[in-house]
Amino acid sequence: TIFFCIFIGSFFMGQIDPSIKAIGSAQMAAYRFFKVHDNKPAIQRRDADERKEVSSIETFAFEQVHFSYPARPTVTVLGGVTLTINRGQKVAFVGESGSGKSTIMALLERFYDPSSGVVYVNGWDMRTFKINALRKCIGYVGQEPVLFSQSIRANIMQGNPEATKEQFQQACADAQLTFVDSLPDKYNTFVGAGLLTPLCICCLGWRVGAREHHDKVTSHYDLIAS
Picture 1 (cartoon, helix red, strand yellow):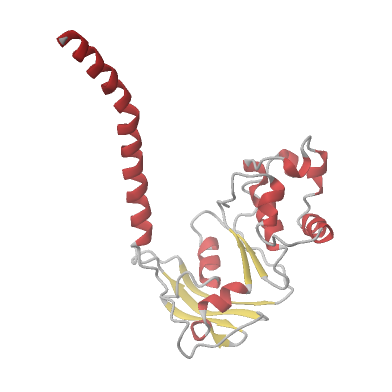
Picture 2: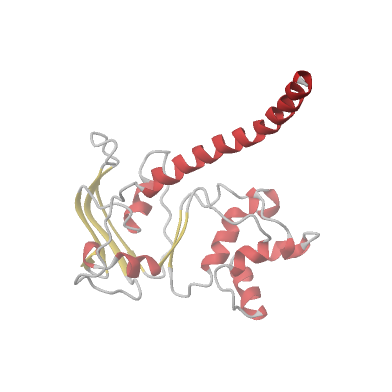
């Protein structure tokens, strides 16, 4: 009887191991979730106050913008940048890693405010606009785009689930995704790393009139997508 109990107990102990691993994984996931959840954004949303609405962006302008990240206040990333970008212009910022290209994108999206100087939108201080309204006018493709683990079609349709076939085809053509027709499963192909950036650009195609920002846009292209 004792041997039988030991045998049964050992069997069930072996079954516990996967559950213990699952609990450990859940704890790590919960830690990461609450770390993000409890994080205080650098820019606090106060859209209920008297801030202005904005429906389109005609001009971005930097005036003597200096910036240092809060985590590295002694390191100057931007030192007195002055520039103007008008609607319809195609502008590329070129430089070494750490020279401030991504920082300019972050300031245009108002993920941060300048340490000093002013960023203007349509001639007004960017801080006078509601953040939600401002960001609806902007399309952004970052260095590490994130998409759903689904087909190309499913990811594109996330931007406009009610799009017609013609609208879908036009958005793909605008993003130069026509090469997908040469793939065996065409738009039912599951997303791969080499498709991340062009797919995100295609998703922005639904947002007519949005000002698009691409951060290191070629970093996720592969040969077939080039």
